[in-house]
Length: 310
Image (cartoon, rainbow, N blue to C red; front, side):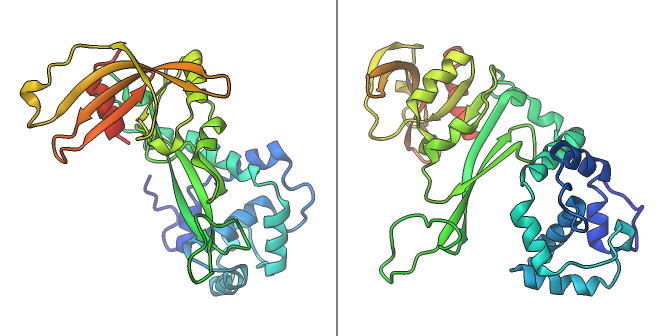
């Protein structure tokens, strides 16, 4: 992806050369995002905000002041006038953010070959196709409490920061997320999986903070698979053995201890979902870990390795 076609140009221009203007136009036309704007087009807004990220601007005022240092060097991008902070603020508030979400998807498809490596397509433990394994997790960004609701309890000093939580869906065979979902930091992780469009045949791997047995039952019905940790306080009933495990010889080293099928109740009407419970001893930390999944055909070691890949 290296290019010398903009050698000698500002770094911002070289970086933006990797965002084809035709893709910006495609996203803009799809959502008619320039309909009410004469000067602050979608592309200009993208350039200005992208520059703000590069220079780590802390506010729109500092961003607009930083733009002055470019001194007309954005002319090759079709930008001859720099914006007032109020103009940029209005664009950020009023232009539908979905247009930039669409641009992200278009860029992801455009650079798909460069982002996917053949190594990541290898089957995990010889069974689970790397191209079918999806991981999701979240990270929290601190903000002011008047912007978004804070996370956690109020501290002793009475001051509390707000926050934003980004839930990301990242395929094992890709280097960038295929989905980013933003929520308040205080919002429970359990709500995020409901935003996903689960693809039949895919295997979704995530931590136990996303536990939702009702969704597990729905995913099983749709043919989508998952692997996660069992919560410590989970109540379940063992209904059978998925495979015979002889762990006695390996107790000092680690490995699969038990491979069972279990029933777990959920919902007000106490409905049942049948899942697989793999109990595993980590050979390095010696900790006992319990994984649950709706994938019954793989070896139990594969279930443990799938979780490890997250």
